[in-house]
Image (cartoon, rainbow over all chains, first blue to last red; front, side, top):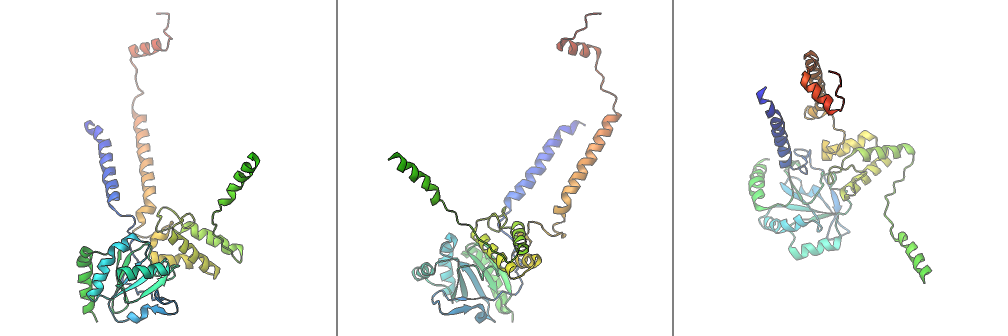
Length: 176
Length: 153
């Protein structure tokens, strides 16, 4: 019974390890249930023209990205230049402008450049809820079959792009 | 002058008008369902709040969606399925019993059982030990401290 004094130490160590593990986890990183599920289609008013609508159906048969953003979201400002760069490289990106003011969003794209093929305007979360979006920016990868293959939360930058997106896109382009 | 100031001050509270979300239903049953749903669904932005408590914009949208669905005659399960399909089990404050959530459900009972077992063993061990013997001198000292020293002897 000499080692009895070690019991509290043992309990402390176990607790410290468990709590440390808990701290290293990101509670905001909710696993998406939509990976490898058919992408929900959306039809939204065009950001640039209230009279028109844009629809995800026009992207059928292509590998494309969906980016959910808003002018109110600081991370979206951060990633915008990189999105512009991707668009220059020919990556098809569709935007959903979420919970935004139309005029502000248009001015934002005019000033900073528009990397999107088209932008749907979703001021009251009618489309984004179908996609399980709960923050901005979020970027989805949709394959030729119309399945969601990846979801990235937070700003997109070069490192993530090269490590996670490039190999996936290459693979998806190869699929029929 | 003073009176005017008092009246003006009394008018101040009228400025503090908080916006209240009004949800009107066709029947009390729907209202009860709505209230139960927003109490049990979890906000994804303020993760330790349910939809009813959270002021996050997403929670407002989710409440609104819940409201619309309930008003259109959706059952509780319909709404829950809708949310789980999009946001996963995470939106449920009452998680389903699955292999991955087994520890969550069974864990507390395992710990309780362990505690009871420990307690039983502890009590039995103590019962087997001889009654704590106090030496004669200790007893004397204790009595002295308590001011009960026996005068005889």
